[in-house]
Amino acid sequence: MTENTHPTTAPAAAADRADFTTGEGLRAVLHRLDHGGRRAWQHDAQAAELMAFTAEKYASLARKHGLDPWEAASAAFDVMYTRAAREAHDPWAVVTHAVRITCIFEERAQGLLCSVHQARRPHISAFHDPERFSDRETPLTDYHPAFHIPAADAPDAPETPASARASTSAGSAVDDAIALFTLLDWPPDTARAAVEHVCGALTRAGTRQTAYEALRRDKHARALLDIPGHSWTALLKALLGHPHPAYTATGLGRGVLLRLLIGESLPVLLRDDDLVLSISLAAPRRRRNHADDTHGGA
Image 1: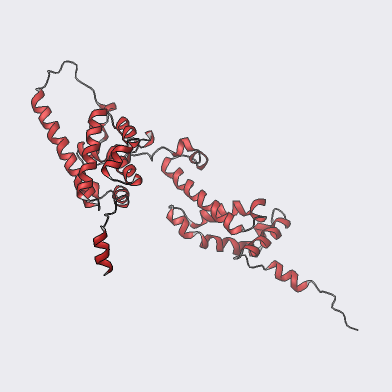
Image 2: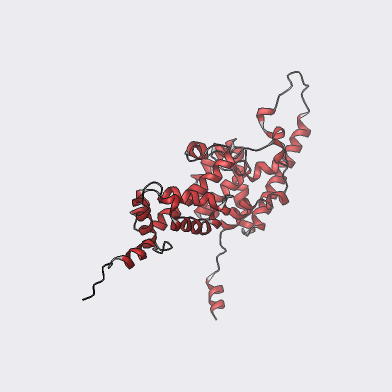
């Protein structure tokens, strides 16, 4: 009578070569490498194949954040080495989520010129990336009050010409702001009424921050202008600037009105992709009347 003395050889070989591209296979490989001890990752052939596959899998994600694919693979290795990844219901989902978060903070750390550990802290990641004075078309020294030194003995300038120039500049900025919103799919009458209302509130409030907070809570004005809530919020941030202190020195923080007043032109604003996208996406949709709907249906 002949007996098979090695009944577990084939299953064992199959377990050793589990398909790590699936969740179940990855879990099996991670458990086997964990049982193999500290040096298993270094000498196991399938571990090398797994890391090569991981680098290829997350290459596009790494490039999106300006990183090398093997940096993403390194982040994936750190996660795969943990018990949470080995025992997860879907190990690849856990790894992908961790790699995405790591890539985001790696990119943020490079921009902030700090460590990844520091970039993960909210009070540090809220700051904008460092900039050179020469990076902007309008030099920082031309508009930032920290660089202004008033002359104590300077003679008083004539008030009338200065007032006239300021009035002309402000009027031109309002017209350009209305044109900007109109070019980005806002109805002309809505754009004009909304921009003029915001400018009036800004004149009364005196500061952009105060005007922003007052207008944000002004539901009566929004209802009167017939603008949806998300469109109203986007308009306020675009015109008056983002209220967070971290954005103060950026285009997002200064807002369209201030940028126009300090010399930026309408074509320059139209080259600001983030600004154009936020305004165009927030444009109120034109409402068709019932007769138009009936005619269109016919």
